[in-house]
Amino acid sequence: MERTQPEGTQGTTQEPEGQKFRLVAQTEAEEQAYNYVQYRNTPKPSGLVGSVAHIVKGALGAGILSGHVAYKKAGVFVAIPMNICFGIYMGYCLYLLVKSAQVLYRRTRVPTMTYPDVGEAACACHSNPKIVKFAKHFRHLIDTMICMDLFGSCASYQIIIAKSIKQLVENTEHTSMEGIKVFCIGVAIAYAFQNNPKFEGMTPYTSLYSFLQFVGMNVFSMSCVSVVVPIENNMKDPTKFGLAITVGMGLVILSTFSVSFFGYAAFLENSESPITVNFALNTLGKVVKGSIIVMIYITHGLNFWVPFMTVFHYIKKRHDPNKEFMWEMIYRTIFVIAIAIIAIIFPTINALIGFLGAFCISSLGFIFPPIIYFLVIWDRPGLGRFKWRLYFGSILIIVGVFFSVCGSTVNIIELVSIAINPTRRVSLEF
Image (cartoon, rainbow, N blue to C red; front, side):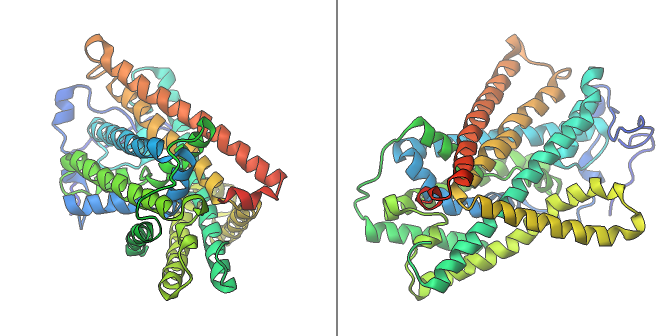
């Protein structure tokens, strides 16, 4: 049963007009006096194992099916260590995000938040009035990035479904059921030992341009930025989130490495996205391809619902409340058609998910969490001796900005070239 907070301590009482969060706890002692867990309404809280499972499921989406192509672009000597580094980098930044959220729960007396809530609250509780005014804008920026990521994922799902159906119908070689993804890893490993038992012919390294393409694809395949805060909100013991994200990201790194390395070893220069397109058209291969189609179809609907409802929350205010359902159906139709048009214009999965990974995921996973952490610790407990937190956090942000800007630029060039020159579409798939 949800507990009632002490009168005057809720983060939404006596708030300034237009401001959702306000600073309640003025000292560290007041922060520690508030136990946000006891005020949460979690009928079925998750234990450590369940939380790890949710992190892994949230990260291993359709992006993992293109991991072998990402490894081909970077070369194995570059891809393997960078795969590990990006996994650790993302895991640590997401840990900072949740750690900041837990401080904000105590400061605002609001026991649960979403990612956009955390960004808004971090600004709203800052001592600088100029930063406080930016709170809503920061929230809208995070909302925009999440919507771009999920809508873009829907476009990539449509491409995967179309390619898989085309291959099954035409019976040609080229063109959540979470267990299916795990099964794909096993099949990729089996193909590697069958087709290339000595692991020969794998490119050790390529070019900076190709590496930047790899960055976006690899980051996209490991992203769980949209689920970590809800997972922490539902944990039985949120203090164990650090352990959950460590184990979870470790499994994610292992999974992406397995399907990427062994998939590349199996198919080499013939590697194509999604990896199921490379599977033989025997009975087992057709079952896997069909299962992937069903899985992606279901995931498409789930992924579409979250960003659409976020966008509709803003645009429905411009219409008659009595006709809300009608307008929701109209906008749903418009958005689905728009996503399909994007998939038709840019039918190459690699460049699309590379852009989403470099632009959206790098922002949400590498840049925003350290910024939020800065806002939270700036006044209390401060930047530390010799301002080490400032320097360390700045490095995290600078590296994230570099990969975001450079990776986005490279993938935008690829997307534009595909739109201008349709004859490149086939060649870019390999």
